[in-house]
Image (cartoon, rainbow, N blue to C red; front, side):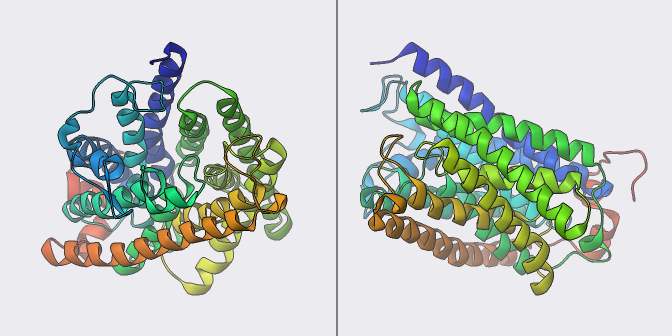
Amino acid sequence: MINAADTAWVIVATILVMIMTPTLAFFYGGLVRKKNMLSVLMQCMVILAVISIQWILFGYSLAFGPDHGGIIGSLKYAFLNGVGLDPIEGQTIPAQLFVCFQMMFAVITPALMVGAFVERIKFSGFLLFVVLWSTLIYDPMCHMVWGKGGWLFDKGALDFAGGTVIHITAGISALVASMMIGKRSGNGMSSSPHNLPFAVLGAAFLWMGWFGFNAGSALGVGKQTVSAFINTNTAAAAALIAWMALDWFINKIPTVLGVITGVVAGLVAITPAAGFVTPMASIAIGAGGSIIGFIFVTCIKPKFGYDDSLDVFGVHGMAGVWGALATGIFAVKEVGGTDGLLRGNWHQMWVQAEGVLVAIALSVVGTFIIFKICDLLIGMRVDMRDENIGLDLTQHHEAGYTLID
């Protein structure tokens, strides 16, 4: 039976998650050079449209359709065939609302990867890559973790709002794509953000949207909704403070870029655990995600020299890994799900680790193959001249500013 309060909340949560994608565009856009601002906005906005259609046509069915081998759903629900306004069994919201809510997750996941290869990717190659990646990596991973009959779902893997499904897959794939496309030319790796206020505004709205992301994943109004809500804010706050403290201690000064990066790392880390842990645990999870992100952004990346432009791997991938494992450590049955390692449940920790390994393996192998195919068919990188001029003018014949550098 449809519950009016649950339906109203999930509609609001869907809107909140939807606005995260254009918000992410401003967060990323503020961090690139002026000549590439519009290209970032374009990529994120186009993903919002293209993956919305992909999801309606067949993506939802592949993710949540009848199971095939624990890996992928069938095409039974392609074109939303048989998916109407009555609730799915066990839910209290219209089935098509569930489709819309999950659609926004499918949209933002490839959008997260944009930050890894900004300022040098060909728009046509990017479009093909996004559609193939969503179909061949996101949809199967979504089914395995959240779909009825999915391999990791049946094992009891806990992923409340997408730490494994979204952040690990996007973060690991971003690293692979950034390495395959190569480093930016000229001073790309050493350039400063062209508009930090845009990035701060983007981070603030991401923080707000994350309440829909996490608390909305309860799919109704109840105790677990409130738990996810308070844990989301608590983890973000702890992460901001942790990154600022590290910046202050190691680099002798706190930075705006540092605190907004820390916020995102904390939000990523709490995502899989939001509906399964206590507020005190969320402090440890958020701060831990920030510390891990800081290490990968400031130490690991310079050491190995990969050009993950806006640190998608360090902030989303590695904080996502921590969040998935931390869920297995801190989960308590009273909040939701099952007990974790601290309550003596070693099995849950192993299941969480399995989920992490599957997500990493699928992302590495799948992204490598998809990137190679797209590069052979269309080409993935713009030529040196276009890169030096900037993608705004060369890919879209528009400029975000009157004067560009």
